[in-house]
Length: 615
Image (cartoon, rainbow, N blue to C red; front, side):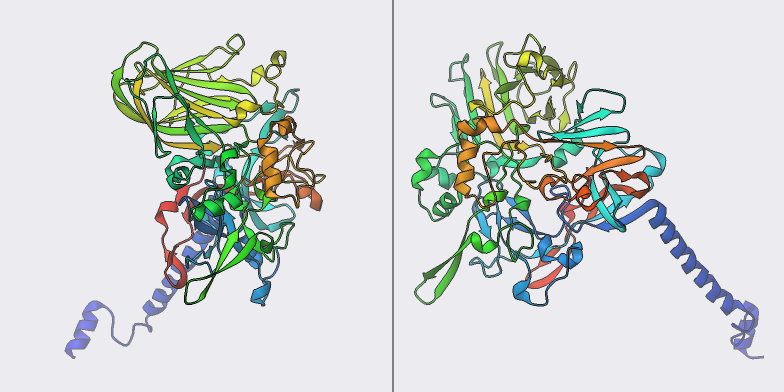
């Protein structure tokens, strides 16, 4: 017997009998069974535990992104995103893309939420910036959540569209079963079955932080515009001894009288399109001396795209883009001047605001009443946060209403020599204070909805006043303090739209914008800055939705551009979503669009910074 046969016999397997004795077949069968088991587990995993989903549209912006363009403002360097869903009708289910490139929709412009500059985003822009369009966020959906607990208000939820069950939608759950949901003044109110009063619904801090939208950030102020004489948004009092350096840092000193409060105030001053173009060219517009502050509105940069061959009611990009030819000595250079679309500049006043800033304090605190003061204005009512810089004690109050609203008190560590991030909010009829991202606990919640209509002093439908043109103030008394990185944000504004309302962009009962489709930018700016028109802004529409047993109401964060529960009845579909159509809760953006490769139409580098949990 050969050595090889001896070895084969010793191992219990001959070289030519592997299949003959069945071991090879068993190996094949085991492999096949393992693959089948893996497939079954994957199907079970997808069916009952986790599912992956791609966001196709911008109905949940800024929380979740559909097809969009990433833009860095050429003037202030603010990063923002512009909806590009119209460029992909075949992917969003809104039609088929044309084979003729000239007939395809293209996003050619977008407006910065910070400085108001409308940038040209076409491929032939003079700076050769690659404004490519990206696909939507890819998210992970937990399907098991609803097997063990009830769905929760404000959670981002994936569900099957009632009219087309094979199509998944993602929205925020705002209405629970057995209640009536009311949308008014941009807020959500609920009346449970058997009750008579509607109660405002407040957002938990995590969800609120994801829904807040940028109004102004001093980190992106443009000092050159100020040096040319254009008024800055933040301004100190004329007789102030404090230093406001480069429109970014506000500093007080104990060289000043310690009994005087040094104030800096925010005014919502956003240059017009014409002013932006002149300022970018290095010139001071003649209108600079008369630049007026405006009401803060529900403007959303994501919706500001100028679209060529738009299929909706939006006007064409050509209405807002002018071609300018310049000779550089050798050739003719074509430049593009963009103007913002006045229909999408925000037509609804938002009084629910938040201001955040870094405060650096020293030990040099002299008087007993030294402190930090922050004021927020809504409808002529002043809401105040005071922090004692010696003890860190915080107090929240309402000016002139001490008899009906007793100030609330809490403890902070904003004292002595330290640096903190402070955020004061007046949102959903509640005052809230955060220090370093953590909410401060008070002796009781600073909620004031019980004061509504008390002796007609704080009506819910009150209109803005002159005070709302200076809606935020920060003051310091008796301390050496530096305040920087001031950021103004606003709450999401839900439009009270339904199937009977075609004016989905404007919520006013009697709109001074008249037939706003087709109005000019300057017309709309005049209305937002002239007090004679302010009487219209507090009186808004309201709409109610009845939610029955095992039903839920879903709204998109991008309210004016979301086809959600409010509008389904136009297609004969009830507004609520039945429980059996709920898929699961959105947990994680596991793959935002990848980072681009230069000169290559691929986005395959992981965008780790944008991977995030969904709130």
